[in-house]
Image (cartoon, rainbow, N blue to C red; front, side):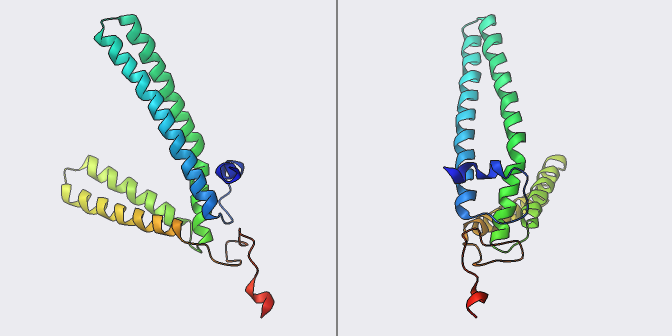
Length: 169
């Protein structure tokens, strides 16, 4: 449970290293939280639709207003958790002795791919960039699953507290 909330304690700390446990427990926390929030939003939106089907305008406004407030809450929560999510991802990459720009490159590629796909009618380029984004995401997933480098690396000390091999040399 401690690992689940550790990225919130290290809110905007992009330096250093994070263990797999810290990254994946925080990811599990995010997935469960988003499922709960999305479920609440769907219940509120469904309630608004059912009220509309029943012909009750006051029910539509009440349920629809609640769904809008919940939608705003979801936006605020997303914005609040964006920085710790990026930070723990960068620290996790640091643990595998990779630059945090691997994550930045993925974000840039995904944004460019989406912009080109939506603004141009070119399905070919959009499809190629989408496939490249998917391959990049799979590579990042593999990096996040790999064990960190043993001992200190250029990003900091081993978060597992491993012994430095140079001590015994």
